[in-house]
Image (cartoon, rainbow, N blue to C red; front, side):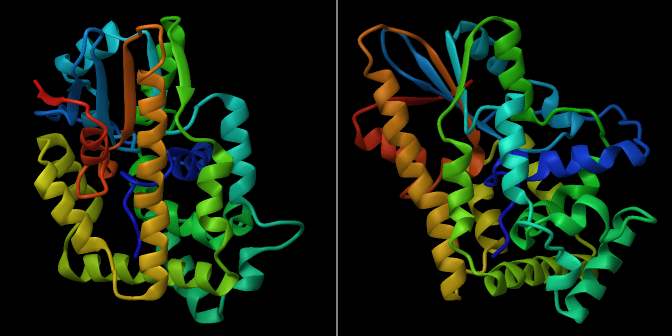
Length: 310
């Protein structure tokens, strides 16, 4: 049931990284190939706007923007990410990730789960354990962050792709906002019981163990699909990772993707329908674009003509 960083809100992983990165050393990134074909579409019109599929990681290959992305971004008057990336919004997101009061994850997890989690954290970085900010996190937040934690800790201080885009927009004095609020994203998890959150964490650990046994790296596989810009391969990869059989999985997936896609499509439509003609650059996780309930289909149903670039 665990979803990739393509679909999850950026602060859920980025803030955890920021909390831990100061005590960990960075690894130098080698010369690596960047995006070959971006997930980029033009919304055709007199004042064309753009849809860009992002990935919420700090990999240098992803951060090297394709020229077509740069051109579309430069032409836009306003930039909208999933949520705003300003400090106040990130702080709100971080607080929403934390357990209430004096609760500690180490007091809530079954002994076996806690042992597995501690071992996995130690594999990610020697000496890293269920202490400090990790011990204060809600189980769902740690489940969302764990699969990408190792990769992000290798690049401390770097912004993820959507954050980079948001702050670049501010630096160039463009309008920079979010299509959703933190409260709306946190509400996806707000209805989960503590047992369901712990189940999410255990399923994440299962997936990590299975990948290690097979000698595969799911995040690297996903990154390669993203760099290639293959939407069909992306959908296939995401579906392979999704356990859609359980009631919890189906409910979570509907809230995480389907409902949010409809909400974002409505808000994109509302912005594009404003009387003043502006050019927008919408940067949303790439997993929101494919399928019958994806943003591409939803916007086409509203009458918009979309053209894949470049």
